[in-house]
Image 1 (cartoon, rainbow, N blue to C red):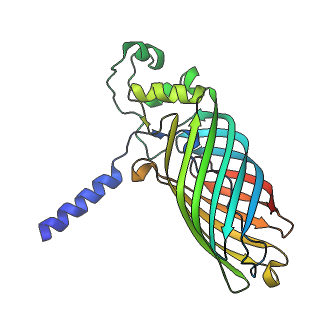
Image 2: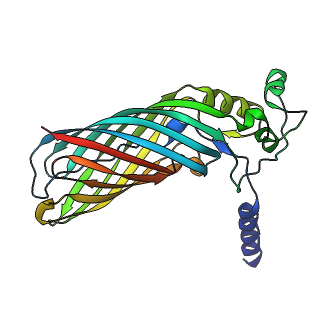
Length: 277
């Protein structure tokens, strides 16, 4: 038993201390920026349909092996509420911008690699160097690259009111994306020669989940509501999963706005309008 405990501790230390090759995602694999909207009042239980349109601006300083990312886009979502708590939500949107390649401090950007494609070796390597860090110092490694992506999401869930002031809910479903850009082309080339772990293809989908907790201001939300939403997309291995937190204020007139912090997109600001039918 003692030997097993020592083996477990040593293994844990090695996993903690061992760096891994830098992972690069498609930007479409980020959590879709559209927030989940909620009923304007806590006492409503009628079946209704809602449509929400929103726009956003996004930025990433230096994280997830990219930096200086700036992007903008928009989303349209439709929600059908059946009774007091059950709902289905479908959202579609797109965004685009530019970014630079980077390397996180917990990734090993000096890994030695084996070139399997002579043509790509000439394109991406420099002076016979075999590591990603050296490539980042070249003119190609310092450039900004454009990207664009479409995203789709469908979620089934419950959105409950605990009394007149508390909102609590959970949902699960699928998020998909498509894209093709300079960033994706270079990312694939770097992955082919082994500089990086190219986590995502240009198109893909994965299970997604969301849960949220919120507070209504005034009786039945007379002055609006504020929610914190926790989103995750489970694409690839557990180390490749991405998440985000959305902080949203919504007014009874249907206008809403907020900020998001998360993986791939460090910060985004969004505003929109909800229409109820």
